[in-house]
Length: 235
Image (cartoon, rainbow, N blue to C red; front, side):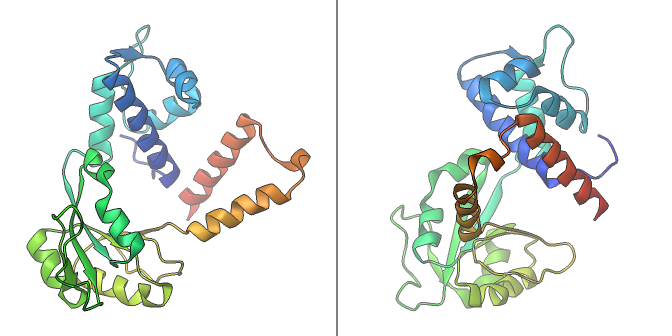
C-alpha cells in the first residue's frame, strides 16, 4: 500500500467496486478486466486501476481480476472483514427506519441499540423485536456493554452537538450524522454528515440551469473528482 494519503472519494469508489463485485460473484463470474467492469457498471476503467493501485497489485495481465479474490481484498481494505456494532440516537421516523433496515448486515454492520429521550419510547422494541430503545442518558454504559464502534445521529439539529459530545465521551470514533448541523469534532473522531436538504437543493440548482451549461462529459467529471482529491491531500 502506498504511503500517500488516501482520499475519501477513493474509499467511496472502493465501496462501489465492492458492490459490483458482489453482484458478479452472485452471478458466478470468476474473472473480469477493469474495462469490462467499467462497461458493465458505468464506471471508468482508468480510475478503477488507479484506485486499486493505491493498495497493491491485484490484476493479472491477460486475465484481469479474480472476482472473489478482489472482493475479499476490498472487503479487508474497507475494514468490513470485522463486524461493526451500531447505535442509533434518535428513535423518530428516520432512526427507526434505519434500525429496521436489513441491508446493513450484508456489509457487516449490526444495529444493537437505539436511544431516545422520549419516555413513551424508552423500553419499547422495534417491529423486528431485536432492538430495544434505551434512555439517551445510558449511552456511555450501553456503548461499553454492547461494544458499539459506530454511532448514527438521527436527532433534530439543535440536539446534534450535545448527542455527539455524549457519543465521543463514550469512546465512539466513527459517527454518521443525519442532522442538518455543523458539528465540532475532537481529534481522532470521524463524522460523516448526510444532509438530505443540501442534496435536494443541489438537484434544484441542476434543474434551474440551462442544459447547455451542465457538464455532462464523463472525462470532465473525472477531472473534477481528481481535483477534489488533490485538494483533500493538501488539507
